[in-house]
Length: 216
Image 1 (spheres, rainbow, N blue to C red):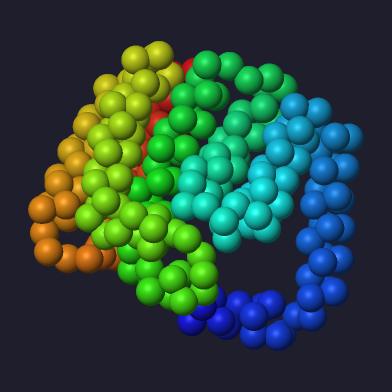
Image 2: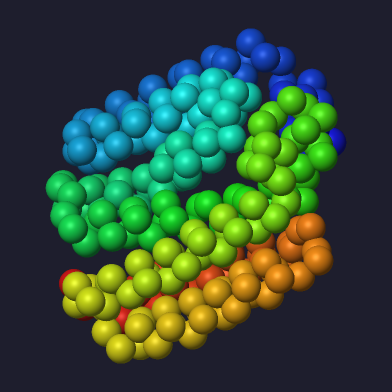
Protein backbone atom coordinates (compact mmCIF):
# COMPACT_ATOMS: atom_id res chain seq x y z
CA UNK A 1 0.00 0.00 0.00
CA UNK A 2 1.19 3.49 -0.82
CA UNK A 3 0.12 4.66 2.65
CA UNK A 4 2.49 2.24 4.37
CA UNK A 5 5.22 1.99 1.74
CA UNK A 6 7.68 4.15 3.68
CA UNK A 7 7.42 2.21 6.93
CA UNK A 8 10.49 0.34 8.11
CA UNK A 9 9.77 -3.11 6.68
CA UNK A 10 8.14 -2.19 3.33
CA UNK A 11 10.84 0.38 2.58
CA UNK A 12 13.61 -2.10 3.39
CA UNK A 13 15.27 0.10 6.00
CA UNK A 14 15.02 -2.77 8.48
CA UNK A 15 15.63 -6.37 7.29
CA UNK A 16 12.80 -8.82 8.11
CA UNK A 17 15.12 -10.95 10.26
CA UNK A 18 16.02 -7.95 12.42
CA UNK A 19 12.38 -7.00 12.76
CA UNK A 20 11.53 -10.54 13.84
CA UNK A 21 14.24 -10.52 16.51
CA UNK A 22 13.25 -7.09 17.81
CA UNK A 23 9.55 -7.97 17.69
CA UNK A 24 10.19 -11.10 19.74
CA UNK A 25 12.86 -9.98 22.18
CA UNK A 26 11.39 -6.61 23.16
CA UNK A 27 7.93 -7.96 24.12
CA UNK A 28 9.60 -10.79 26.03
CA UNK A 29 11.74 -8.31 27.98
CA UNK A 30 8.74 -6.11 28.63
CA UNK A 31 6.68 -9.03 29.88
CA UNK A 32 9.49 -10.15 32.19
CA UNK A 33 9.60 -6.66 33.72
CA UNK A 34 5.83 -6.63 34.18
CA UNK A 35 5.88 -10.04 35.87
CA UNK A 36 8.73 -9.21 38.24
CA UNK A 37 8.18 -5.49 38.85
CA UNK A 38 4.44 -4.92 38.41
CA UNK A 39 2.01 -7.85 38.66
CA UNK A 40 0.82 -10.92 36.82
CA UNK A 41 -2.53 -9.41 35.81
CA UNK A 42 -0.85 -6.60 33.89
CA UNK A 43 1.60 -9.02 32.27
CA UNK A 44 -1.23 -11.33 31.20
CA UNK A 45 -3.20 -8.47 29.64
CA UNK A 46 -0.09 -7.27 27.81
CA UNK A 47 0.60 -10.75 26.46
CA UNK A 48 -3.03 -10.99 25.32
CA UNK A 49 -2.72 -7.65 23.52
CA UNK A 50 0.46 -8.73 21.70
CA UNK A 51 -0.95 -12.07 20.60
CA UNK A 52 -4.34 -10.63 19.62
CA UNK A 53 -3.00 -7.72 17.61
CA UNK A 54 0.24 -9.01 16.10
CA UNK A 55 -0.64 -12.65 15.51
CA UNK A 56 -4.42 -13.01 15.34
CA UNK A 57 -5.27 -9.66 13.76
CA UNK A 58 -2.10 -8.71 11.88
CA UNK A 59 -0.98 -12.09 10.55
CA UNK A 60 -4.28 -13.86 9.95
CA UNK A 61 -7.58 -12.01 10.17
CA UNK A 62 -6.65 -8.75 8.43
CA UNK A 63 -6.15 -10.53 5.12
CA UNK A 64 -9.06 -12.95 5.42
CA UNK A 65 -12.13 -11.17 6.83
CA UNK A 66 -13.68 -7.72 7.15
CA UNK A 67 -14.47 -8.58 10.78
CA UNK A 68 -10.77 -8.27 11.63
CA UNK A 69 -11.34 -4.72 12.81
CA UNK A 70 -13.38 -5.91 15.78
CA UNK A 71 -10.52 -8.10 16.96
CA UNK A 72 -7.93 -5.40 16.38
CA UNK A 73 -10.13 -2.97 18.28
CA UNK A 74 -10.20 -5.23 21.31
CA UNK A 75 -6.41 -5.37 21.36
CA UNK A 76 -6.23 -1.62 21.00
CA UNK A 77 -8.57 -1.14 23.95
CA UNK A 78 -6.55 -3.26 26.39
CA UNK A 79 -4.09 -0.50 27.51
CA UNK A 80 -6.63 1.11 29.91
CA UNK A 81 -7.04 -2.29 31.54
CA UNK A 82 -3.27 -2.69 31.75
CA UNK A 83 -2.87 0.70 33.40
CA UNK A 84 -5.67 0.02 35.87
CA UNK A 85 -4.27 -3.40 36.74
CA UNK A 86 -0.75 -1.99 37.10
CA UNK A 87 -1.95 0.41 39.81
CA UNK A 88 -4.52 -1.76 41.60
CA UNK A 89 -3.41 -5.31 40.85
CA UNK A 90 -6.93 -6.26 39.85
CA UNK A 91 -9.78 -5.49 37.44
CA UNK A 92 -13.11 -3.97 38.43
CA UNK A 93 -16.27 -2.72 36.76
CA UNK A 94 -14.66 0.70 36.44
CA UNK A 95 -11.78 -0.77 34.47
CA UNK A 96 -14.16 -2.63 32.18
CA UNK A 97 -16.04 0.61 31.51
CA UNK A 98 -12.83 2.24 30.26
CA UNK A 99 -12.21 -0.84 28.11
CA UNK A 100 -15.73 -0.67 26.66
CA UNK A 101 -15.39 3.01 25.77
CA UNK A 102 -12.13 2.52 23.90
CA UNK A 103 -13.38 -0.67 22.21
CA UNK A 104 -16.39 1.17 20.79
CA UNK A 105 -14.31 4.23 19.89
CA UNK A 106 -11.83 2.14 17.89
CA UNK A 107 -14.45 1.22 15.28
CA UNK A 108 -15.63 4.60 13.90
CA UNK A 109 -12.05 5.85 14.23
CA UNK A 110 -10.61 3.02 12.11
CA UNK A 111 -13.51 2.89 9.64
CA UNK A 112 -13.14 6.58 8.86
CA UNK A 113 -9.55 5.98 7.84
CA UNK A 114 -10.43 2.82 5.92
CA UNK A 115 -12.86 4.78 3.75
CA UNK A 116 -10.14 7.15 2.60
CA UNK A 117 -7.75 4.33 1.70
CA UNK A 118 -10.28 1.75 0.50
CA UNK A 119 -8.77 1.63 -3.02
CA UNK A 120 -5.34 0.89 -1.57
CA UNK A 121 -6.81 -1.82 0.65
CA UNK A 122 -8.54 -3.30 -2.38
CA UNK A 123 -5.33 -3.23 -4.40
CA UNK A 124 -3.44 -4.93 -1.59
CA UNK A 125 -6.06 -7.67 -1.31
CA UNK A 126 -7.13 -6.65 2.20
CA UNK A 127 -10.91 -7.11 2.72
CA UNK A 128 -11.47 -3.95 4.75
CA UNK A 129 -15.09 -3.09 5.51
CA UNK A 130 -15.41 -0.44 2.73
CA UNK A 131 -14.00 -2.92 0.22
CA UNK A 132 -16.43 -5.69 1.16
CA UNK A 133 -19.52 -3.75 2.22
CA UNK A 134 -19.21 -0.52 0.28
CA UNK A 135 -19.08 3.14 1.25
CA UNK A 136 -22.67 3.68 2.40
CA UNK A 137 -22.70 0.58 4.59
CA UNK A 138 -19.44 1.71 6.19
CA UNK A 139 -20.88 5.16 6.85
CA UNK A 140 -23.86 3.55 8.59
CA UNK A 141 -21.53 1.44 10.71
CA UNK A 142 -19.61 4.56 11.75
CA UNK A 143 -22.80 6.22 12.93
CA UNK A 144 -24.04 3.06 14.68
CA UNK A 145 -20.81 2.65 16.65
CA UNK A 146 -20.80 6.34 17.51
CA UNK A 147 -24.39 6.08 18.72
CA UNK A 148 -23.33 3.23 21.03
CA UNK A 149 -20.17 5.01 22.16
CA UNK A 150 -21.82 8.23 23.35
CA UNK A 151 -24.12 6.67 26.00
CA UNK A 152 -21.28 4.35 27.05
CA UNK A 153 -19.21 7.45 27.74
CA UNK A 154 -21.72 8.45 30.45
CA UNK A 155 -20.97 5.33 32.51
CA UNK A 156 -18.01 6.82 34.43
CA UNK A 157 -20.39 9.50 35.70
CA UNK A 158 -23.15 6.96 36.44
CA UNK A 159 -20.71 4.83 38.43
CA UNK A 160 -19.45 7.93 40.27
CA UNK A 161 -15.97 7.59 38.83
CA UNK A 162 -16.23 11.25 37.80
CA UNK A 163 -18.46 14.23 38.45
CA UNK A 164 -20.51 16.82 36.61
CA UNK A 165 -17.53 18.34 34.77
CA UNK A 166 -16.83 15.01 33.11
CA UNK A 167 -20.52 14.54 32.27
CA UNK A 168 -20.66 17.97 30.63
CA UNK A 169 -17.57 17.16 28.56
CA UNK A 170 -18.99 13.78 27.54
CA UNK A 171 -22.34 15.32 26.57
CA UNK A 172 -20.84 18.16 24.56
CA UNK A 173 -18.14 16.20 22.74
CA UNK A 174 -20.52 13.28 22.17
CA UNK A 175 -23.21 15.52 20.70
CA UNK A 176 -20.67 16.94 18.24
CA UNK A 177 -19.45 13.44 17.33
CA UNK A 178 -23.00 12.24 16.68
CA UNK A 179 -23.79 15.34 14.66
CA UNK A 180 -20.72 14.84 12.50
CA UNK A 181 -21.65 11.20 12.00
CA UNK A 182 -25.19 12.06 10.87
CA UNK A 183 -23.93 14.79 8.55
CA UNK A 184 -21.41 12.40 7.02
CA UNK A 185 -24.02 9.69 6.51
CA UNK A 186 -26.40 11.93 4.59
CA UNK A 187 -23.65 13.64 2.61
CA UNK A 188 -22.35 12.56 -0.77
CA UNK A 189 -18.77 12.40 0.46
CA UNK A 190 -17.10 9.00 0.32
CA UNK A 191 -14.73 9.77 3.20
CA UNK A 192 -14.18 12.36 5.92
CA UNK A 193 -10.76 12.87 7.42
CA UNK A 194 -12.24 15.60 9.60
CA UNK A 195 -14.38 12.92 11.25
CA UNK A 196 -11.27 10.79 11.70
CA UNK A 197 -9.32 13.63 13.35
CA UNK A 198 -12.29 14.59 15.49
CA UNK A 199 -12.39 11.05 16.87
CA UNK A 200 -8.89 11.65 18.26
CA UNK A 201 -9.95 14.99 19.75
CA UNK A 202 -13.06 13.36 21.22
CA UNK A 203 -11.16 10.65 23.09
CA UNK A 204 -8.58 13.16 24.29
CA UNK A 205 -11.28 15.47 25.67
CA UNK A 206 -13.14 12.58 27.27
CA UNK A 207 -10.19 11.08 29.11
CA UNK A 208 -8.72 14.45 30.06
CA UNK A 209 -12.03 15.38 31.67
CA UNK A 210 -12.08 12.01 33.43
CA UNK A 211 -8.64 12.60 34.92
CA UNK A 212 -9.45 16.16 35.97
CA UNK A 213 -12.82 15.27 37.50
CA UNK A 214 -11.95 11.85 38.90
CA UNK A 215 -13.84 10.72 42.02
CA UNK A 216 -12.12 7.39 42.69
